[in-house]
Length: 201
Image 1 (spheres, rainbow, N blue to C red):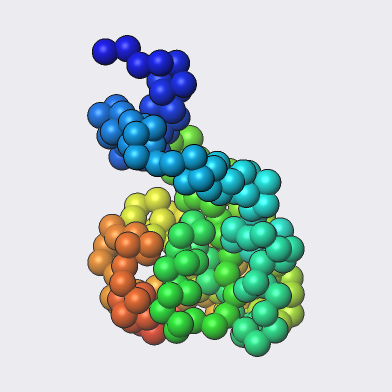
Image 2: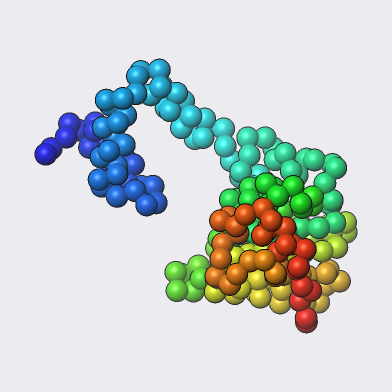
């Protein structure tokens, strides 16, 4: 069956989402046409417009925000001495749900992966190093995922910081090898933070 051009365009657009194949995209597109009223469709369109126009990466930590800086960076009640380094903004959200960590974050927006052509210059390590010139920071917690890429990224950053006086630690107990932080529950993440281990030089 050949759909009208607008439906075909919506189907192809929906297939851009991870895990959405052609059949699922068709179901979503037809549901949009058959089940949603004009007001509901306008609501969806407005939400996409707000994302496009109002959301950006915090210029300090890289977290998603609609204010400059983000609510975490401008919160003076948070511990300025500690930075947790994560791969993705979803990791920040996962950690914030625990209400266990009260320091700052730095989002790398990826991990080193030579097989995918991603090197250190392709993620925000430079921004992290610039932030570490702040005399207030005393500990860097490397909370990249416990995957091969995450471990490689953590080791790379640790070596860059070898000659500093910073306390460099790595999340440990609670997260199984190969797991992603964003999928872990609050208790598991809290244990991983509490069980962090200092890196040996």
